[in-house]
Image (cartoon, rainbow, N blue to C red; front, side, top):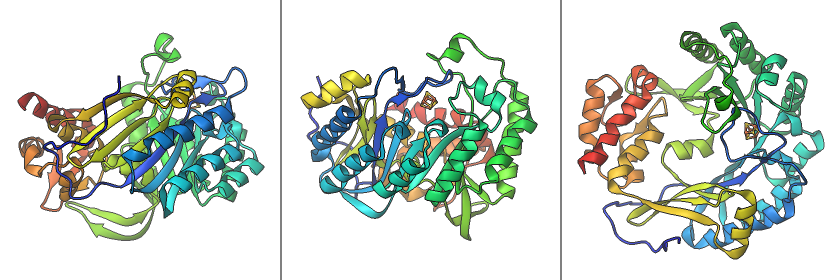
Length: 412
Ligand code: SF4
């Protein structure tokens, strides 16, 4: 039984609610990749596109009272493989959004695309539907590694997809992975160089990890050792820094433009092609998650609520049709909010303005002062009166840094 969402006073106090993003989950893929633990399902027969779009719109409709009067800062279609859907489907969802909510005029609207599903005409139609940023799951340019990752595309399709994307979109992200089965540091750098050849505004470089409930977990491939992957990580970071990319989050790199501004111990760019949608997550903004298994975080006067939709696509559609797509809902207590804020904001290499903690977590910074002092004493963060940021040591041992804020829960 889902408890009611009637706001009630608690110890969290917000002067204003944070920016609100909108996430739509499309839960199907042409084939399940052996390393993937996302809520994605192999499309064995025809995807019920019309019924799913109707379910997304019904889900959005029933969620409106929770976000009434708020403006939409960004929209993201993730998955799964959203590019399996037609441009008409995306258009129907975006029209439904715009007729029910106020979307900021310059809002970033991203669609995740798989190179195996790219057609030039379809990308043009996505652009015409209002998608203004494309995120392409390239992963590698090496056919041997793409095969080992079980991807449906090869290197030629990856290159073709990027060329089509660059012709139709100014704002493009390429997803790459490193630490792949049998990969050498030189091969990891060759992938970065191939990506740089297209001058993408944004790159995401993920370390392949073996997650429970995946094929790779049951049948583990031979991966490069820790020393080799650390060498890859260092080489990737140096290469991208030299090419003019800001490493602004654990795995995210954005092309820099604009002047540099002072930061406690370095300079950070005033402007770069950072992903506005993900940045809102990392700055502990709000997001409404619509679709099978989508998660959301919403602030109300006095409290923060996290919610999750029914996970399985078929059951989700039936639940949305009944008007009950939300499966779980929990309030983030004052004991947890410090940890949850830090878990996001300390992923940002430049950290966060000190005032953001109070604005987004709804507690004074003194609520985590003991933990901040301990983190500073261990050399894991640096701070002045304006900003708090992880040090290079804190970034490398992020889990240890975050553990300090978990202690707060036990103490409350
Ligand atoms: S394409 Fe992406 S979401 Fe789909 S199975 Fe592969 S990794 Fe997962």
